[in-house]
Image (tube, rainbow, N blue to C red; front, side):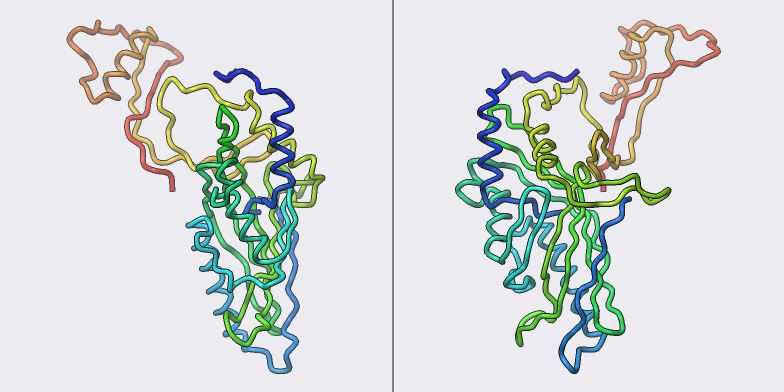
Length: 312
């Protein structure tokens, strides 16, 4: 079982940190499982833009979202958000472009409070989907799938919290005469570790839904507690990309791996040969005894990675 090298922090300190995070204007700029689907209202104008024009505008906005995720919203393209845009996630609800921007800057450590609380924040975008426009000019919801991580540097053991989930964006035609033709009117985020509710259907998984804030708080605190810190691995870990962190499980994408494998009778000799191979040495060093391998109805092998590619 993994143990922490640091003594357990007083409960009062963890709850003080939780209170500070819950009261601060902070949220997670993120949000197979089914996402509750909504459709934005169609254009109220008597002569709505052509479907092709709206489709092009939606494509542009989806590209803008991809850029914002890649830079952790630095910059945030505020012109693509309605002045009264709303944001909801398992911990926070807010409204207005300024509140949205301050929220993101807090997590990224670009505010005074954020610089005290967090470090090494980053978000990986896995996909942007949706946004089809029908004949009446109604725009379907746009969804993004992401993985977010940040380090709580205010705690001495500097735990890293990781969240994966989806964001559901409601898009509407821009009422302003100037600027983008389509803007974000609302964003709702769902965490894989907290918001998947119901048994779901075969082949489709569960569905996302609202949950009590206490569930999200419990998930967040569980990642910040000293007991959540993993022991240092005795060997290098094969790099992976975390696609989903659910309640008690993770979905990872590993890269292609070139591994060395040897048959063995004595485990210590197998380790010796593997160590030589992974260091680029000859499989049999002059000072190493020659292993004896006898026929075995159940062959035993040991392997270790030699080269890996970055996960994509």
